Amino acid sequence: MLRRHLEDGEEGADGTVLVDVPYPDAAVVTALLDVAAECFGERGSSVEETRQAALETLLQLAGFDEESQLNRGAPGRDERRR
Image (cartoon, rainbow, N blue to C red; front, side, top):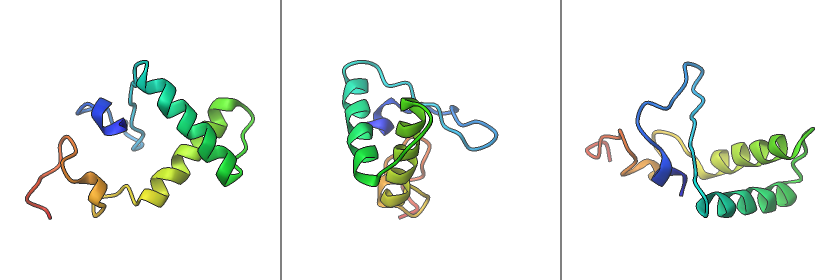
């Protein structure tokens, strides 16, 4: 779902990626992050920090890197690198 809303050129110099997820998909992502935060025991000083921590954990678990199967077909990825 995040990849669907990801556009090329949205990565910051520090590697941060901004993804604008419109409603109703945003409601699904928010619910998923809230459940993940509860499952992982994530805590933050705000709801948004807690959700960010859960997102980081989910991305680590998913292996969201160059070798990950999740990256196949992502915008800006070379399909020949299988």
